[in-house]
Image (tube, rainbow, N blue to C red; front, side, top):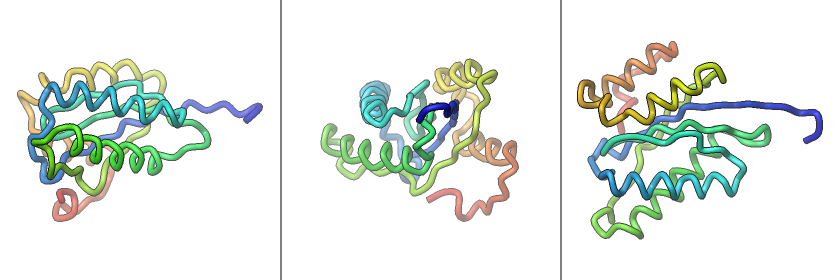
Length: 150
């Protein structure tokens, strides 16, 4: 696309189904590498990946021809299949149905990368559920608690 310039950074957050603690440190390390491979084949930049046993944060650079919905569908469908096939103990693995996505300015990029990289420490003090509620509130999402968790 000549003469088109975009820098679309998106912070995506999603959990395992029922927030089950499937994502051990070894699984996460391999998962993030796999996700990076999936995305690079679609010209989506994986700027950062992090999380804990029950959820994932990704900072993505989405191309002008892409969409957040397409990136999330690509990541979640392929990675859930890969996790079930690669790890015998994860035969019933699944992601939550939805996700949250927040735009990030270039000036906040490094802060978000640090935040994503510090998830284990961060969640020693605060649950994923509390963090997620705060994200939704801070970004002015009206939400019904009955439909946030699946």
